[in-house]
Amino acid sequence: GSARGSGRAPRRAPGRRDARAGGAVWDACRFVVRGLVRPAAAAPGPSVTHRLRVEADGVLLSDLDRPVAGVAVSAPGDGYAEVAVRLPGGGEPVRATAAAVTISGPDFRYHADGRVAGPVRTRTWTLHPAAWSLTLPAHPGGDAPAW
Image (cartoon, rainbow, N blue to C red; front, side, top):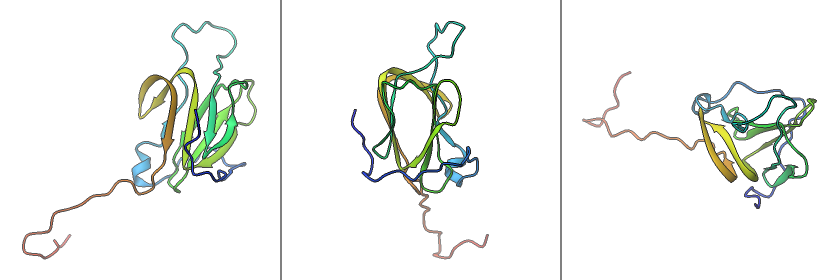
């Protein structure tokens, strides 16, 4: 699959850990992709890996030839998503910040908004700051209520 990003390099956050603070809208759905869902018949033993292509604003973070242990995307409220790609064997994850994240590969499932979805071969998450708004009808009589 091709990248659907803005074409600019993602902002890097090398020393940043999982940011848990965010704006009001994103507090409810902080983790867009919490992690990949392991196959139902996963046998005990070495950790399960996935062959996925992960892109942040069109910049390649991991390709199909480099297995990943998991991918996490969070929206801390600064207008960008934080992406962390965990590699097998531990160590520091590959991190970036971006407005769009695309994951593609052989059929995979993922957690989003508290649900398991898929299988899919490609999925793009795009952060739209201030995407939610509320329009209220005019108050009868034209005056605003005294809250």
